Image (cartoon, rainbow, N blue to C red; front, top):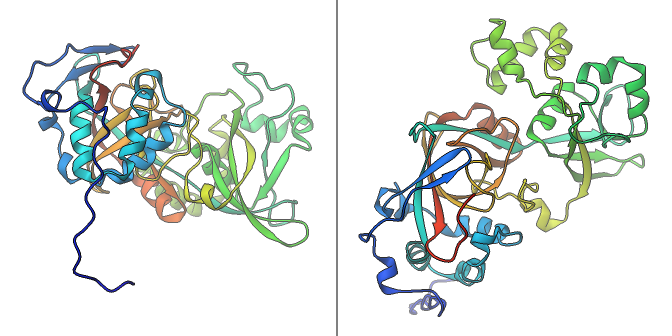
Length: 370
């Protein structure tokens, strides 16, 4: 640690010359009209409506925004040069720029409700083996030959019981896990990291990224347990507690979800290891600052002000819409990316609380959302 010295701090970088100033920062002028999306309605509001705006660590969100600028949507692409320059700006500069360049809109359902649901997801980390053994006997697969998007393939149960399905999967194994429930968790999350023991005994960590599905419907194993009256707590900790008490019914629970995810293997260098998997926008997710949304409500790459309070945590922060999921449907609906590993998994397994969202849309020059 360096000793402190009595010197003046360096001045904050000046705002980019092409950022408008003055009247564009006024929060009292006339508001624009509401905007209609396929699955939501956006209602313009004052910046003062956004709770916690002055308290957020915006530099954390800026890292996620820089990722979105790698593959920007047309409306926000015009802002990316300014976003990049302001990545070294002070929080005050960044907040002033947000007010100058963007208009907040409250996201509402068609019926006018602005309340929705926040859940969370994460990137699991499991031990695996490159070859099967008595311990590692649960395969994860690459997409099989002949898999066609939009045409249902074999169900999870059929893949384990039908000779023709097993033949189609033979040789497509990437790694083998020790626990079929871990495999299910990784498939539900859509990606994960595995510490693979290679045939020579060496161990390395790789990412298994989403490649395809069998196009069967997703069925929640938690809902399956609730419908049977087997549990009251359908969180992952509750599901695992039920499995520990009923190991003979593990296969039955697994087969209740016919959907299977196939993966592709990606190497992890030091930079990749610090970021999350790529979301539906095609950019790496940022823990705590990326959300999955319904793209019919919020376009990918859109900065969003997210507010949620519940027994797990309180959030009032800037996030980026960078992903989606089969269960993420509706106007005010988001899945918050919590990061990787056990701690993130514990949070993601329990998080289910009320949500409000405000999209931040360019004031001028941006294409209307459609």
